[in-house]
Image (cartoon, rainbow, N blue to C red):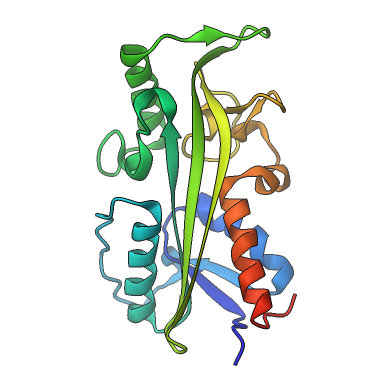
Length: 216
């Protein structure tokens, strides 16, 4: 029996993430939905208390798939900044506190960098605070087959001194790719998908599914 759903629930209420996954899975004929689409269901709160991205993704996927009784894909991702010893890491979404806004998290990140390191300025006059890496872990659960798949991806960049760009979400306006001279928030969605941690992890996951018979 192959894994071939026509719908796939992403265990998140982050509309930016759902939009990215919808673009990734659309060529496979899979309709992507977020938790905000699951009306009529009582969904348990999931405490993301694991110390790795993969641990949190697996926990979210398993609990949500059990509640919905349909295949669920969970993503846990975040920003790891070299000068901050890997922070914010698994706390990326709540770096400035529970239910923090993207702006609050970005402001906290720049404040922490200002306290703990010194910036440099590149040849284009852009302030560079630190090398950084976006990381993503995906965990897909099919509750009917009692089967799971996992994949991870990463993207290297640097943190700049002020936000650039209006697209994307999270730390995208501060995450700069020197080779492109753009932040994630300045990239077209299709361009970001080719480079991003989430795009890389998703393509690896799709390869696994295709090896098991998911038609492309």
